[in-house]
Length: 151
Ligand SMILES: [Zn+2]
Image 1 (cartoon, rainbow, N blue to C red):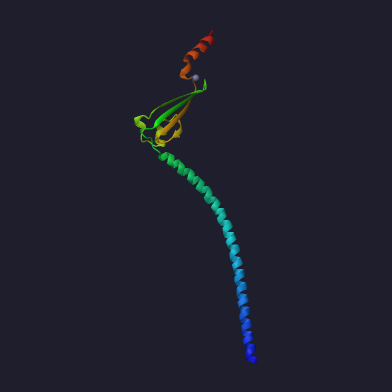
Image 2 (cartoon, rainbow, N blue to C red):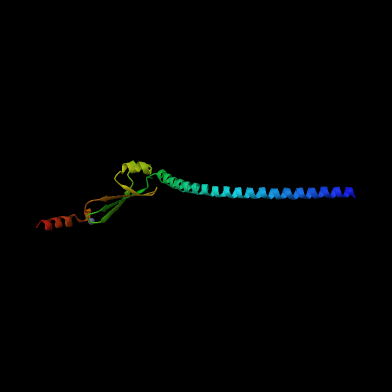
């Protein structure tokens, strides 16, 4: 009978120990979880930064890509000029000059310093410039205006 009692006590202690163990483990687990949550929150913050960086990185990448695009000998060069005195845009397309073929956008821009590159692809390049003048389409009108003005 005594032996039975001591066995019961041992079993009880074991059960208690097991329960305590589980309980402690759960607390630890909870701590871990909250620590992890904290970590996640922190990671999210870092992710935002990474995402921002990535966006900038992508931007840089696409800029690099355009810079890597080269003038092909088959490109069409379109020249657009806005004449600000009459607000006419004169546009003309021609084959690309031989001396600028195989240039990338940066080098091409150096050749056409005064021009804004509106489009730069292997097939088409569009240059744009504003000119503080009348376009060639109405020299006559300009002269007439001047004559009429002086009379
Ligand atoms: Zn005009």
